[in-house]
Amino acid sequence: MKQISKKHPLAIRWFHWINFPVLFTMIWSGMLIYWANDVYHVGFGDKTALKLFPDWFYAPKRLMDTPLEYHLDSRLSEGMAWHFLTMWFFFFNGLMYVLYTAISGEWRYLLPNRHSAKEAFQVVLHDLHIRKEPLPPRKFNGAQQIAYTSVVIMGIGSLLTGLSIYKPTQFAWLTTSLGGYETARFIHFWLTMGYLGFFLIHVTQVIKAGWNNFRAMVTGYEVIDVPASASTSKASPAEELRP
Amino acid sequence: MEPTKQMKSEQQKISELRTNELSEPLSEEEAKRQIQHLSRRSFLRGGLVIGAGFLGWKWLNRQYTDDGTNWVFRRALQVNEGIVQGTFYSANHLSPTFPRAQAKDPRENGDFGLEEELDADAWRLHLYGLAEGGETTEEGMAMMPPPDASLTLEDIKKLPAVEMTTQLCCIEGWVEVVNWKGAKLSDFIEKYPPVKDENKLIPAYVGIETPDGAYYVGLDRESALHPQTLLCYEMNGKPLTPEHGAPLRLVIPVKYGIKNIKRIGVIRFTSERPKDYWAQQGYDWYAGL
Image 1 (cartoon, rainbow over the protein chains, first blue to last red):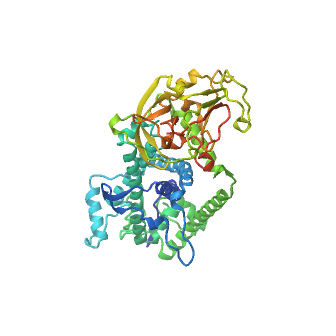
Image 2 (image 1 turned 90 degrees about the vertical axis):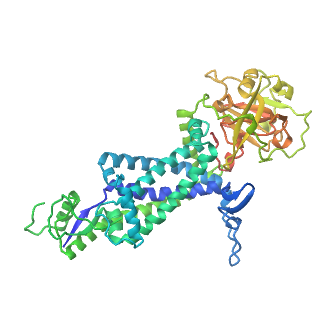
């Protein structure tokens, strides 16, 4: 026997899916801004061992007689225009999400607790096929709680470092407390790289978890197995493993 | 949940589900049928949103351009400008200052308006829009009216000299600490007062140009009057070199480097927003920090 169970509230599904194109636009426009002054590299003193974006990235070789010129390093004004328009959507969507989870009580599923770290470690072992035991039957396991809470904190970090390099004179106190303009810009950049890392792991896990799990983020419902002692009580439905 | 004896209509079951967290136990096929019914609507809605987003993006790309960017972005930049000016801009917010020893010569970035050889003796700073002086025309430089005043570098140096070591923030994203010496633009405006507007304020904008008119910036009144906005003639303890804007340049830490115009030839007080070289290329006119 099966049951159809409500999983994700409508509001959270909207926040989630709005955030997807908004964050994508923030990252892309942010890269257009970065490429205008591509300074991050691995090196010592004046010696550069590794550039983040090597020269061929900006002027790739001709491919089948078609010049591959995207002028990625000269699209600064375009990047800034997109960035400083989209930032409002990123900010308000994130703010509404945090307020909603706080007021609705959804935060109870999302905030890590003192067991989360140990559980997250077990999840990693499980995913690496080292640990055989099934994962905890909850909406979000320890690894998810840590990941989904961290990404909100990263979002706040992006807003603060962003504000400190957007208006470093008006918010001089903030810029200075973040270690100055260049440090704040560095943090702002690596938070973005953090989102890309989050995205890769997230998508991998969603693919692994399968259609039932993905569909729940669209429709809000998932199909679950009825436990052996079949009961329609709402109290504690057994839930299958899901990310 | 009430056990059901009668057959319920599909709609009833679905609406029951929408209000409950959990359905009654269902057979495999029944669960499949119901979840498909529930999903159809959500995926259809999702598809419509994606479609609308795509059309919106196409629409955005079709909009007319307003100085190098389309009017939607131009408007957004102006809204941001209004928010900055209306909520947190203050003349008391100062750009951080640094120890003199940290100052370095900045890179030579941007030589627009510096092409002609500088004749330091012949150089004059021409002012338009002064309270006392010649006639001003709305046509401005196009008509080449006689300036209200033409000053020498000595006139600027008579004003109280100010020294500061601040960060020069390039819009490209790099910053450099530089030591500057010059006169406050606010002191200069007090000495050479422009025509006041109906509110007894100086005009809302200041336009500044190189002598050949090849480079030009526009400033809002508040930024022009900021205490760290200087007309500079010395950099890192030495007179300005031609590449860095000799004989006189603007240093304005509340703006990106693009507004820090070199080799000033003309200062114009005006109630209309002056043209700005980089704003015409799609950048933010305000460019405030």
